[in-house]
Length: 286
Image (tube, rainbow, N blue to C red; front, side, top):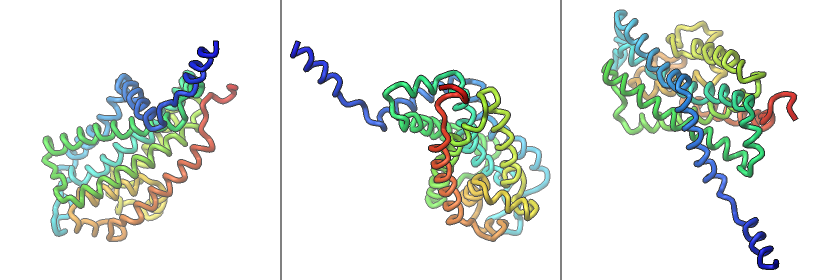
Protein backbone atom coordinates (compact mmCIF):
# COMPACT_ATOMS: atom_id res chain seq x y z
CA UNK A 1 0.00 0.00 0.00
CA UNK A 2 2.84 2.39 0.85
CA UNK A 3 4.57 1.67 -2.46
CA UNK A 4 1.33 2.29 -4.34
CA UNK A 5 0.83 5.59 -2.54
CA UNK A 6 4.35 6.69 -3.38
CA UNK A 7 3.76 5.88 -7.06
CA UNK A 8 0.49 7.82 -7.01
CA UNK A 9 2.18 10.84 -5.46
CA UNK A 10 5.05 10.62 -7.94
CA UNK A 11 2.63 10.47 -10.86
CA UNK A 12 0.70 13.45 -9.52
CA UNK A 13 3.84 15.53 -9.19
CA UNK A 14 5.08 14.92 -12.72
CA UNK A 15 5.62 18.34 -14.25
CA UNK A 16 3.24 19.35 -16.99
CA UNK A 17 4.74 20.57 -20.28
CA UNK A 18 5.71 24.22 -20.24
CA UNK A 19 3.27 26.93 -21.29
CA UNK A 20 5.33 27.55 -24.42
CA UNK A 21 5.43 23.89 -25.39
CA UNK A 22 1.68 23.60 -24.92
CA UNK A 23 1.28 26.78 -26.95
CA UNK A 24 3.22 25.20 -29.84
CA UNK A 25 1.04 22.10 -29.61
CA UNK A 26 -2.05 24.29 -29.55
CA UNK A 27 -0.78 26.12 -32.66
CA UNK A 28 -0.82 22.83 -34.57
CA UNK A 29 -4.42 22.23 -33.49
CA UNK A 30 -5.45 25.77 -34.46
CA UNK A 31 -3.83 25.41 -37.88
CA UNK A 32 -5.63 22.12 -38.54
CA UNK A 33 -8.94 23.75 -37.64
CA UNK A 34 -8.17 26.80 -39.76
CA UNK A 35 -7.26 24.84 -42.89
CA UNK A 36 -10.29 22.57 -42.46
CA UNK A 37 -12.57 25.62 -42.52
CA UNK A 38 -12.23 25.92 -46.28
CA UNK A 39 -14.67 28.82 -46.76
CA UNK A 40 -12.95 31.00 -44.17
CA UNK A 41 -9.47 29.99 -45.31
CA UNK A 42 -10.15 30.68 -48.99
CA UNK A 43 -11.70 34.09 -48.25
CA UNK A 44 -8.83 35.08 -45.96
CA UNK A 45 -6.14 34.03 -48.43
CA UNK A 46 -7.74 35.18 -51.67
CA UNK A 47 -9.37 38.49 -50.71
CA UNK A 48 -6.17 40.59 -50.83
CA UNK A 49 -5.04 38.77 -53.98
CA UNK A 50 -8.34 39.34 -55.77
CA UNK A 51 -8.47 43.00 -54.73
CA UNK A 52 -4.91 43.55 -55.95
CA UNK A 53 -5.77 41.94 -59.29
CA UNK A 54 -8.88 44.11 -59.67
CA UNK A 55 -7.19 47.40 -58.82
CA UNK A 56 -4.02 46.67 -60.79
CA UNK A 57 -6.11 45.81 -63.86
CA UNK A 58 -8.73 48.55 -63.65
CA UNK A 59 -6.37 51.43 -62.89
CA UNK A 60 -3.60 50.34 -65.25
CA UNK A 61 -5.22 52.41 -68.04
CA UNK A 62 -4.92 55.61 -66.03
CA UNK A 63 -1.15 55.73 -66.20
CA UNK A 64 1.39 55.46 -63.42
CA UNK A 65 1.75 57.12 -60.01
CA UNK A 66 4.37 59.81 -59.32
CA UNK A 67 5.96 60.36 -62.73
CA UNK A 68 7.85 63.41 -61.45
CA UNK A 69 9.24 61.76 -58.30
CA UNK A 70 12.82 60.39 -58.28
CA UNK A 71 12.64 56.61 -58.57
CA UNK A 72 9.21 56.86 -60.14
CA UNK A 73 6.84 56.39 -61.68
CA UNK A 74 5.33 53.29 -60.18
CA UNK A 75 2.39 51.29 -61.48
CA UNK A 76 -0.98 51.32 -59.77
CA UNK A 77 -0.41 47.66 -58.94
CA UNK A 78 2.73 48.59 -57.01
CA UNK A 79 0.87 51.45 -55.35
CA UNK A 80 -1.92 49.17 -54.09
CA UNK A 81 0.34 46.28 -52.99
CA UNK A 82 1.29 47.74 -49.55
CA UNK A 83 -2.38 48.33 -48.72
CA UNK A 84 -3.20 44.74 -49.65
CA UNK A 85 -0.34 43.52 -47.44
CA UNK A 86 -1.70 45.54 -44.49
CA UNK A 87 -5.22 44.31 -45.22
CA UNK A 88 -4.00 40.72 -45.30
CA UNK A 89 -2.46 41.12 -41.85
CA UNK A 90 -5.71 42.65 -40.57
CA UNK A 91 -7.80 39.79 -42.00
CA UNK A 92 -5.66 36.96 -40.61
CA UNK A 93 -5.28 38.56 -37.20
CA UNK A 94 -8.06 40.91 -36.07
CA UNK A 95 -10.94 39.73 -38.26
CA UNK A 96 -10.12 36.03 -38.05
CA UNK A 97 -9.85 35.92 -34.25
CA UNK A 98 -12.75 38.28 -33.59
CA UNK A 99 -15.00 35.88 -35.53
CA UNK A 100 -13.46 32.52 -34.58
CA UNK A 101 -13.50 33.01 -30.82
CA UNK A 102 -17.23 33.83 -30.46
CA UNK A 103 -18.01 30.71 -32.52
CA UNK A 104 -15.81 28.60 -30.23
CA UNK A 105 -17.50 30.21 -27.23
CA UNK A 106 -20.95 29.37 -28.58
CA UNK A 107 -20.23 25.70 -29.30
CA UNK A 108 -18.72 25.18 -25.85
CA UNK A 109 -15.13 24.63 -27.03
CA UNK A 110 -13.77 27.42 -24.83
CA UNK A 111 -15.62 26.13 -21.78
CA UNK A 112 -14.17 22.66 -22.30
CA UNK A 113 -10.67 24.05 -22.78
CA UNK A 114 -11.05 26.10 -19.62
CA UNK A 115 -11.69 22.86 -17.71
CA UNK A 116 -8.41 21.28 -18.81
CA UNK A 117 -5.00 21.75 -17.12
CA UNK A 118 -3.78 23.72 -20.15
CA UNK A 119 -2.81 27.27 -19.10
CA UNK A 120 -4.90 30.04 -20.61
CA UNK A 121 -1.73 31.59 -22.04
CA UNK A 122 -1.13 28.46 -24.15
CA UNK A 123 -4.51 28.87 -25.81
CA UNK A 124 -3.71 32.45 -26.78
CA UNK A 125 -0.20 31.48 -27.91
CA UNK A 126 -1.83 28.92 -30.17
CA UNK A 127 -4.02 31.61 -31.69
CA UNK A 128 -1.04 33.90 -32.27
CA UNK A 129 0.92 31.02 -33.81
CA UNK A 130 -1.95 30.28 -36.17
CA UNK A 131 -2.13 33.94 -37.18
CA UNK A 132 1.61 34.12 -37.87
CA UNK A 133 1.67 30.99 -40.04
CA UNK A 134 -1.49 31.96 -41.93
CA UNK A 135 -0.17 35.49 -42.51
CA UNK A 136 3.14 34.22 -43.90
CA UNK A 137 1.35 31.85 -46.30
CA UNK A 138 -1.07 34.56 -47.38
CA UNK A 139 1.65 37.16 -48.02
CA UNK A 140 3.78 34.63 -49.91
CA UNK A 141 0.81 33.99 -52.21
CA UNK A 142 0.22 37.72 -52.61
CA UNK A 143 3.88 38.37 -53.50
CA UNK A 144 3.92 35.56 -56.07
CA UNK A 145 0.83 36.94 -57.79
CA UNK A 146 2.19 40.50 -57.68
CA UNK A 147 5.54 39.50 -59.17
CA UNK A 148 4.43 36.90 -61.72
CA UNK A 149 1.18 38.39 -63.03
CA UNK A 150 1.88 42.13 -62.72
CA UNK A 151 5.69 42.33 -62.68
CA UNK A 152 5.57 44.39 -59.49
CA UNK A 153 9.12 44.79 -58.16
CA UNK A 154 9.81 43.58 -54.66
CA UNK A 155 12.40 45.22 -52.36
CA UNK A 156 16.01 44.16 -52.71
CA UNK A 157 17.60 46.25 -49.94
CA UNK A 158 18.04 44.45 -46.59
CA UNK A 159 16.90 47.60 -44.77
CA UNK A 160 13.56 47.50 -46.55
CA UNK A 161 12.95 43.90 -45.48
CA UNK A 162 13.98 44.75 -41.92
CA UNK A 163 11.32 47.46 -41.91
CA UNK A 164 8.85 44.97 -43.35
CA UNK A 165 9.68 42.50 -40.58
CA UNK A 166 9.09 44.84 -37.64
CA UNK A 167 5.94 46.38 -39.14
CA UNK A 168 4.62 42.90 -39.94
CA UNK A 169 5.37 41.45 -36.49
CA UNK A 170 4.10 44.47 -34.58
CA UNK A 171 1.03 44.71 -36.79
CA UNK A 172 0.29 41.00 -36.41
CA UNK A 173 0.66 41.13 -32.64
CA UNK A 174 -1.49 44.25 -32.46
CA UNK A 175 -4.21 42.77 -34.68
CA UNK A 176 -4.20 39.50 -32.72
CA UNK A 177 -4.68 41.01 -29.27
CA UNK A 178 -7.30 43.42 -30.60
CA UNK A 179 -9.13 40.49 -32.20
CA UNK A 180 -9.15 38.68 -28.86
CA UNK A 181 -10.37 41.81 -27.08
CA UNK A 182 -13.06 42.53 -29.70
CA UNK A 183 -14.30 38.92 -29.56
CA UNK A 184 -16.27 39.73 -26.41
CA UNK A 185 -18.46 42.26 -28.25
CA UNK A 186 -20.53 39.97 -30.54
CA UNK A 187 -23.44 38.50 -28.61
CA UNK A 188 -23.11 35.16 -30.40
CA UNK A 189 -21.02 33.32 -32.94
CA UNK A 190 -23.72 33.77 -35.58
CA UNK A 191 -23.62 37.55 -35.26
CA UNK A 192 -19.82 37.84 -35.14
CA UNK A 193 -19.33 38.33 -38.88
CA UNK A 194 -22.04 40.99 -39.02
CA UNK A 195 -20.31 42.91 -36.22
CA UNK A 196 -16.67 42.48 -37.24
CA UNK A 197 -16.63 42.69 -41.05
CA UNK A 198 -18.15 46.22 -41.30
CA UNK A 199 -15.51 47.52 -38.88
CA UNK A 200 -12.73 46.10 -41.04
CA UNK A 201 -14.27 47.44 -44.26
CA UNK A 202 -14.64 50.97 -42.89
CA UNK A 203 -11.03 50.98 -41.70
CA UNK A 204 -9.85 49.82 -45.11
CA UNK A 205 -11.66 52.67 -46.88
CA UNK A 206 -10.33 55.40 -44.58
CA UNK A 207 -6.77 54.08 -44.12
CA UNK A 208 -5.34 54.52 -47.61
CA UNK A 209 -5.89 50.93 -48.69
CA UNK A 210 -8.27 51.56 -51.60
CA UNK A 211 -7.66 55.28 -52.12
CA UNK A 212 -4.60 57.50 -52.05
CA UNK A 213 -4.47 58.55 -48.40
CA UNK A 214 -3.47 62.14 -49.15
CA UNK A 215 -6.62 62.54 -51.30
CA UNK A 216 -8.93 61.85 -48.35
CA UNK A 217 -10.55 64.80 -46.52
CA UNK A 218 -8.38 66.11 -43.70
CA UNK A 219 -10.93 65.25 -41.02
CA UNK A 220 -11.09 61.66 -42.28
CA UNK A 221 -7.30 61.44 -42.21
CA UNK A 222 -7.33 62.51 -38.56
CA UNK A 223 -9.89 59.79 -37.78
CA UNK A 224 -7.84 57.13 -39.59
CA UNK A 225 -4.69 58.14 -37.70
CA UNK A 226 -6.26 56.92 -34.49
CA UNK A 227 -6.40 53.32 -35.74
CA UNK A 228 -3.59 50.88 -36.50
CA UNK A 229 -4.46 49.95 -40.10
CA UNK A 230 -3.48 53.38 -41.41
CA UNK A 231 -0.03 53.05 -39.85
CA UNK A 232 0.46 49.48 -41.06
CA UNK A 233 -0.37 50.57 -44.62
CA UNK A 234 1.99 53.54 -44.38
CA UNK A 235 4.75 51.39 -42.93
CA UNK A 236 4.34 48.93 -45.80
CA UNK A 237 4.44 51.76 -48.36
CA UNK A 238 7.85 52.68 -46.99
CA UNK A 239 8.95 49.13 -47.82
CA UNK A 240 7.59 48.78 -51.35
CA UNK A 241 7.93 52.36 -52.63
CA UNK A 242 11.14 54.20 -53.57
CA UNK A 243 12.22 56.35 -50.63
CA UNK A 244 11.53 59.57 -52.53
CA UNK A 245 7.82 58.66 -52.57
CA UNK A 246 7.53 59.77 -48.97
CA UNK A 247 6.90 63.15 -50.60
CA UNK A 248 3.34 61.99 -51.40
CA UNK A 249 2.63 61.26 -47.74
CA UNK A 250 0.67 63.86 -45.78
CA UNK A 251 3.70 64.92 -43.70
CA UNK A 252 6.36 64.17 -46.33
CA UNK A 253 7.70 61.38 -44.12
CA UNK A 254 7.25 57.65 -43.57
CA UNK A 255 6.86 58.41 -39.84
CA UNK A 256 8.38 55.13 -38.68
CA UNK A 257 8.64 56.20 -35.00
CA UNK A 258 4.97 57.17 -34.92
CA UNK A 259 4.02 53.90 -36.63
CA UNK A 260 5.81 51.96 -33.91
CA UNK A 261 4.28 54.08 -31.13
CA UNK A 262 0.70 53.76 -32.40
CA UNK A 263 0.92 50.01 -33.02
CA UNK A 264 2.57 49.45 -29.62
CA UNK A 265 -0.09 51.57 -27.90
CA UNK A 266 -2.89 49.55 -29.49
CA UNK A 267 -1.05 46.35 -28.55
CA UNK A 268 -0.96 47.38 -24.88
CA UNK A 269 -4.57 48.58 -24.97
CA UNK A 270 -5.68 45.31 -26.54
CA UNK A 271 -3.87 43.30 -23.88
CA UNK A 272 -5.43 45.29 -21.04
CA UNK A 273 -8.95 45.19 -22.48
CA UNK A 274 -8.64 41.53 -23.47
CA UNK A 275 -7.52 40.47 -19.99
CA UNK A 276 -10.40 42.35 -18.37
CA UNK A 277 -13.20 41.38 -20.76
CA UNK A 278 -12.41 37.98 -22.27
CA UNK A 279 -15.16 35.42 -21.64
CA UNK A 280 -14.78 31.64 -21.78
CA UNK A 281 -18.55 31.05 -21.72
CA UNK A 282 -21.60 32.63 -23.33
CA UNK A 283 -23.45 35.43 -21.61
CA UNK A 284 -25.78 33.98 -19.04
CA UNK A 285 -23.87 30.70 -18.69
CA UNK A 286 -22.43 29.79 -15.32
